[in-house]
Image 1: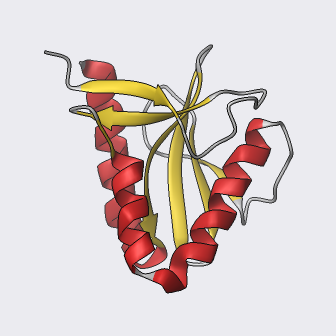
Image 2 (image 1 turned 30 degrees about the vertical axis):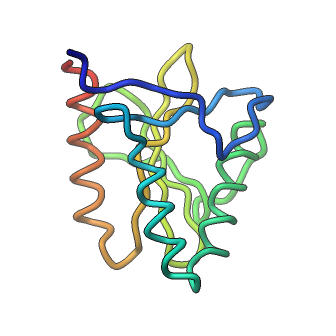
Length: 129
């Protein structure tokens, strides 16, 4: 049985120039779980909404400064990995050509190094499946 799958993101407008998907593990979106956790902490919801908007606008080819949307380096994966950020919220995604961008999950700035290790492992596992 296949462990990983992709679904078009319900959080991003489906008419973007670059399609945006969410990575699912055992038919559950990891990003959806992250959103549920942030909804419980209402003080971070505005940051999450801004981060989602950044992902949507960059999928429509709008450019953002590296302080908001940046290409991550030094991960030894054969794909482009991005980080979208606003306030304390970070959302991690990667580019799979020609399909589009795939949101892996989100995290908080305070857990960034641990989150990045987990994201890189998820991407590696996705490609090794």
